[in-house]
Length: 432
Ligand code: HEM
Image (cartoon, rainbow, N blue to C red; front, side):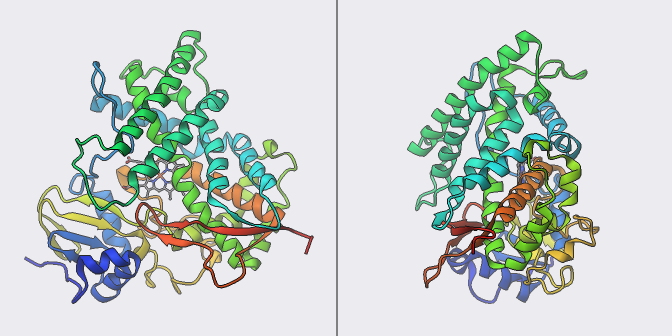
């Protein structure tokens, strides 16, 4: 048996202190796959990361939904219903569907930029999250979005409370206050959504949005039961703005730190139509440098920097044997900093993506959206929202970090790689 190497010192205590530094040390000193402790392995470079994510039967994703199905007399959705709900959602989220609705996505980005306070240091993540929530919820529910937005924001809060680091890991069945709060918010969201689902079904006007796609009867499964629809939507609703706002924090920080790159984005953005609702996919496609900048920030700071899988059986990964039941951590963060795939990997160089027309040719080289059967459902939507938000912000403002010795943010890694508490100052272009 050929076990992956283990770091000579450190182990779990060092990992808990600084997970990013430890992940880098593991990749530098041990290579493609290394062992954090007995039965816990880290896939550190592109090939093993891609292999683990692609081989979903050997390395299944643990079922830990953000919002588990609510207990109901009719029971949880069946696997077939879940599969259908997934396929139906994807009809509304794939790149072509997103491209057809850019005019609905763009106004949120422009509104965010319009409303950004100027001349003062602002904690930027809350307004970013609000803008992305408005856009994401509208993308899912169109004219029903205003009814659902406040509930969506409370779902996000419930999740924040739930993932806050705590000294105790309670067994899943214990109804801790945080879990009870989550269930209350989930019930409130589904109670608000139910009449919308019923109204759309009874009127026959299902809608062209993602909810409309889910309500369409399928030739194979017929109509999806109401409870299966209600269970599928809280998670995806929060997903439309939670990770994108983490990504947006890193992007805005880079606009502040790299003014020349920001100027280049502003030049591209000057060609966007004055009325954001008139923005089309052709305009979005023309933002080539902006898109490359978003890719580059996602490469350096993938919000989902560590993905968890479990080996379902004894299996071979790279040249190593992994025992059944082991945890395998997939690390896009270190995979993206491998000099063999990305020359000068620690340098911020948006230009490196211009040759690729926005996506790398080799599998596993860009893993910010995962890959394989559990790859991100919302990648096209996220890229459209983030590219437009970046363009509209750089078009109007120079961003800067607060002067002085205080850091502008704290890097947290617990539930995604985040610029916690990020403060930035916006100065209108041309006013300096
Ligand atoms: C910058 C923004 C985003 C990033 C970096 C991101 C990243 C990811 C990653 C890495 C995964 C794979 C997780 C794994 O393999 O364990 C994933 C899954 C997922 N993402 Fe995203 N995501 C983003 C935006 C979105 C948006 C806007 C949506 C909403 C439509 C979304 C919905 C989902 C869903 C539903 C899954 C689960 C797929 C499955 O398990 O089958 N994501 N995302």
